[in-house]
Image 1 (tube, rainbow, N blue to C red):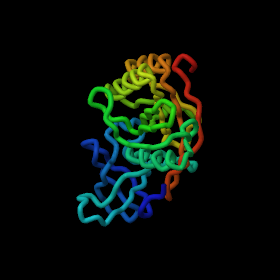
Image 2: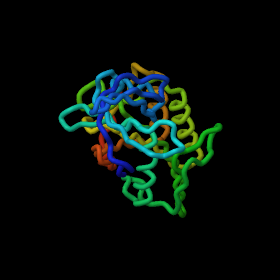
Image 3: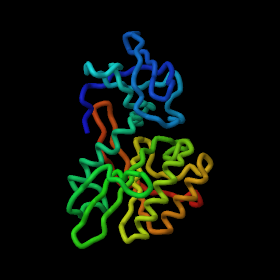
Amino acid sequence: MRFQTPLVPGTLIRRYKRFLADVTLADGQEVTAHCANPGSMMGLADPGMRIWLEPNDDPKKKLKFGWRLVEHGNGHFTGVDTAVPNRMLKTALEAREVPGLQVFKSLRAEVPYGEKSRIDFLLSCDGAPDIYVEVKSVTLSRQQGLAEFPDSVTARGTKHLMELGNMVAQGHRAVMLYLVQRTDCDRMTLAQDIDPTYARAWQTATAAGVETLALDCHITPEGVQLGKSIQILAPSEL
């Protein structure tokens, strides 16, 4: 997935009200960018960080820049736009490029299920169980090479795990797919200290038959591409 317009670098002044960020561009101009990430962005929103913005000339948009990447040095990046995973994975699923999810008849997005929830992707198969696929964006890393989820307490994420377990109990397949939007990590785990309830729900769900899959990304200021499968470590394996 290529960015629609070339990204421009800047220096983060501050992130505030979750969805806003003040940034100094290379020419000294200060702008306000939209931050498409409602999470805590732990370790990704410190003043002085080098970040990359996508300009736009859409008259319908109040803000003319969108925050897309954090640059860590040594050629490594983190993608902060939480809309990217679903857009990229829809394309990859349709192209049959996601490991273990290549065989299906039709794909639908945002299908209602469970208790007032919507599954990210529902794959229907001929003569086989439907596949419920929930996607989570992973951006936290506190240990070299290790990505973690979540970066804050997520009651919604816990609910999704429980509902995926219910789908398995009803005879369907259910997959929790973690997209690691960092280029400096080759494995991931659950941030048990941040949200122990989510970690317990993950263990319960996987024991009930919910499949887990983690994929990394190739990220540059030109675009984001789906990468390879990486290992998911249970907290007890660390």
